[in-house]
Length: 151
Image 1 (cartoon, one colour):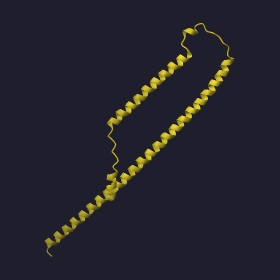
Image 2 (cartoon, rainbow, N blue to C red):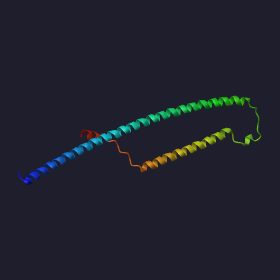
Image 3 (cartoon, rainbow, N blue to C red):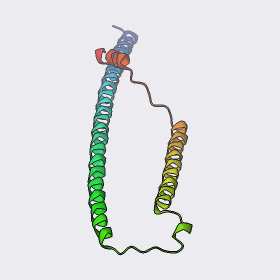
């Protein structure tokens, strides 16, 4: 075998080795991507499950807080009614010129409700503004993922 044939054989074997290494890298890269995709999906599922649980628990806590506050309010109203029975009755000369306590309470809560609705819309508008500036989330590609796993 001549020197040029030996060099040619060595170059051919080197090319074959390069092709095998390249194929191994491609296979490894594909498998690694599949592992990373699985990890991302598992994390997303965990976050989604945790968020769902958090929202359910928050709803339960809110309902309990409202129930507890309702019972407390009822107890205070009962105590106030008993106290009011013991207070002396007097008429103020200007009482008919003042707004009724019901009007004051209703006006105050109407304002608070209007303010809360305004702030709610402000929060939603801020989320919308930031969301429109953020990149759209990628759609889950289960068929692509299955193809990657098969490789």
